[in-house]
Image (cartoon, rainbow, N blue to C red; front, top):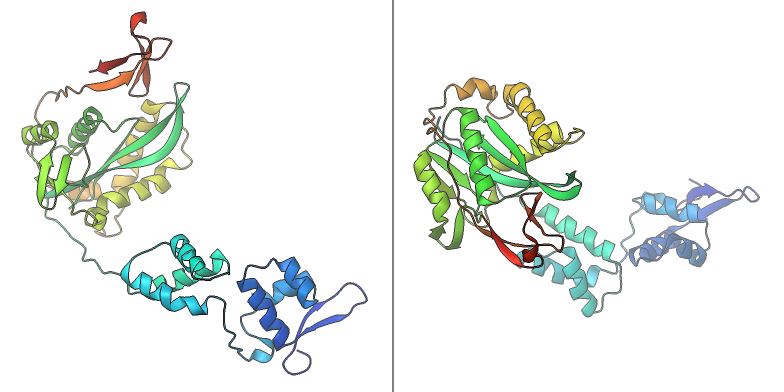
Length: 350
């Protein structure tokens, strides 16, 4: 530090001179930066080197350690932003547009930082962890794992996940479809993996489970409802807007993504699911769970699961497909040939 109230920030290469920055220059640089002015332009206007501008912006306090209260360009609009955020959970992009209409000329980044600060000050909602008795409940959900190249075509990859509420034993299966037949088949595979079914299964408001919902009035998918009765479990759906109620299922996917999927090479869907099954058997269900402090497979022995019925459940699902010009129909990530006179027409695929 040189004279009181000044920074010795940067020794220039030309002539070995010292750039001395006072409170006024510090405030100017900060103000121009708040307005989104590029660093090169700030350096030209203030009359300093670009590196000096960068160092000033990295300092939280003005020269001499004294705080200088400078009215920011966003200050007149902060009460408006506060009021809007107190009523609605609006994104920074929308608030930026709203205050621009009201005369704000600063940058979007300034608004984004302030909105983040406001949200950080809010008290976080607290949730009581919901534990269930053995055999009482499982949770099910889907997650998208991006696109993969299968059979020469890029297709969307989905992961079906089921976790038992008491033991935290989990089952996952990768598919290229979320249709009802795939959904039910994954259920049956999970039941057989666990050795039975729980009394209830909790879902989000999936179309495979719920056709429509208005408040507490639910129109169940009749195909899925028949399946649930045949396999002896009762479906339950989350209250809309409260995804945390099925947090166990959602946490499964973040664990699968980090613990298995990322970095795993596979040759087709069958190979991926074989590797996933091996990972479930040897890693996921044999680790000490962070919440229960027990091994899921050990607690699985305590689950009072209902036996799985013999045989398969046949789902008769009909969907409309467009036949390509070369007489092919896409279904379940596969292509099927049809008679030439159906080219360009819509057909029902069962």
